[in-house]
Length: 240
Image 1 (spheres, rainbow, N blue to C red):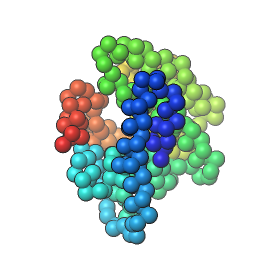
Image 2: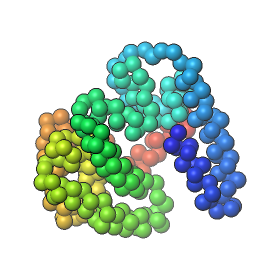
Image 3: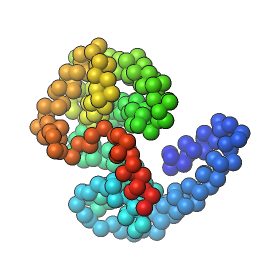
């Protein structure tokens, strides 16, 4: 719902010459993607139990058979459910494996930190999509937000309580997201981490956890940074 809601809320901010196109897009998404999905959900009566599976590159296959609720990935099959929307998937997995705090206050902090990371993460993920003439300006913006807004905030959190993790002195999804973000930042510009010793220590601590260490090894499922070749492959899949 948030995806469609955001499109509608942004409509009054559109330049006049873009409003007709934006309205056409809203009508199309409403009638062909989002509302049909919710209409269908009222008609469903049961799910089939299956093992956990994630789907990204097979987008077009599952879109055709109706497995993708909003006709978009990611989608995860877990505990008899087909879950779409990244935050819903992450929240469920975090709760299932005790990575979501011990009470509602801790969950609120975890959500707040995770949403803050998502803002910077989105800027970084969109960088490969920028036209060449805009990349330098986008990189400058990412560096500024990283060093003056987001990473100082998390460094301050760790310093304020002197504990090993962001929330409740135990591993949570917020720590995992933050370390993932640190890796993304280092792939862009390693020098940006120089003034954040507590974040570097957090990265080392979590990277040495056996499951994470295994995941980071060469040949694992960890995906490399998006480049022009990967973008072209993604376009081919979506356009099939």
